[in-house]
Image: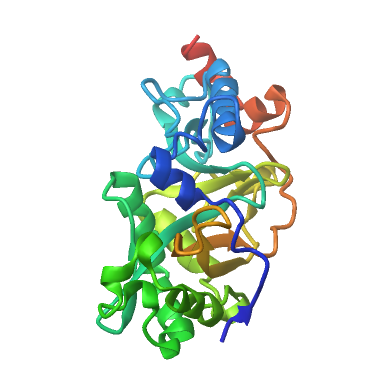
Length: 293
């Protein structure tokens, strides 16, 4: 059973901003995760290490955050003339820092079960697919299922939602459905996250302040340059989230957030490093950058 936590119900979250503005409020140019993605994209593009036609995904979670080019130098004899035909492109996930989340979703309850719910946009569907594949609904039901029907979704009180909701009903939900944090073996496992991204051929993740990691595999053979396998752990927060001011106690929702619990050990290679170091690792013969300039 997860650990009950308190004091987090008023924290702003990705699901709030997404529902209000299509995530534009969170991923606006010049701030947060989008700014970091954009800075890395521009840096790699200037080096000639971004495929033609690629642009950062921004809020579109069904697209990779970054695509980068690297020379496949696995052949026994490498020359400048043999490398051009061995240039490959790779997908990379980008996180601003270790506090960034891997995915959030709203929760609804019907017919005795909790289930993931949210926008019908492509990125929202992809996010729910990630959480579904990691058995998040099963974990929510294991923790909150025994608590019964939340008044918010009880057909018997449904006609009294919003400002007309009976105080005893929203107080019941507040007192019954406490925030829960799943960690360790109770949380979704990192290998499941790696398998999910691997199914989309995304094998690398860059985390600001920590560096570049490979997840399910290392197809670009970057571990020889110090890229580590992602060895952090995950945690899952399940909570009743207040959605309005303190004067609107009836305005709340239920949601989940997949977060990093233990940050990974610092990688010995990062896209934040000097451009020369990146070129040595990804384009040792200088073929890609010369060809694309």
